[in-house]
View 1 (cartoon, helix red, strand yellow):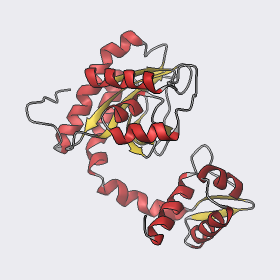
View 2: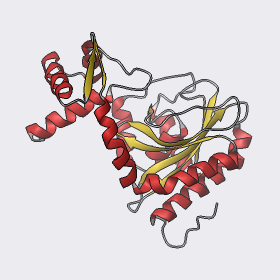
View 3: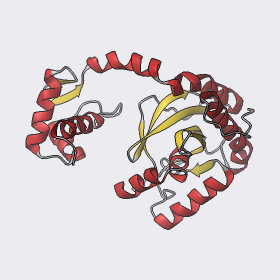
View 4: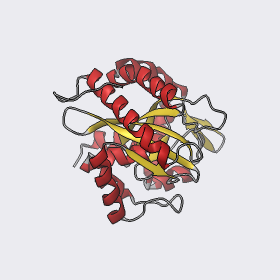
Length: 257
């Protein structure tokens, strides 16, 4: 069992994770509902976060304090992955014409940590810090296909259905992940939002697990199955190029984009 201090830190992170760009202000009841923590625990953690400037109170709601911005610059500067990946994400956007992004896993979710928006008028518009489910979308499929811990986390959290195309059965998910492992990239259609398709590939690390997943997202009118077959190898080659620059690429593999 974790030490008390570690447990408190984990719960504080759970509270902060409740806040998103789409829902930047939450009440205590919202936090309790999202974390599943007792009311007294939530009150104690919120009080501490307020005192440390990590939360700010606005009437009956709370929002994340600006103190967290102090950590964003050193976090980006200290991340070798983000420093290496940025030009590749932009290159993928330019080559495919579609919005490109880099995702890392956080529990049963994936977080967009680098993004380059398409220049088309109708586009997929993701944002850095966006938190999305693992099981809905190609990037999450790539993270789960090569990491059993990621798959187990998604199954434990539950395969919530977002559209009629969302995979909500473990057997179908296993079949799709096997296909991802076979061809090295994933294509999904309308799994999280109707009319939004995506193609992704894993950025593999030293231990054979993905450090991240590289993806493009676009309206289905442009990114259909035929187009996915064309750009899938491009996304995979770009992901391998990132892995090679990071020093992760196994001997004998090529990373030409």
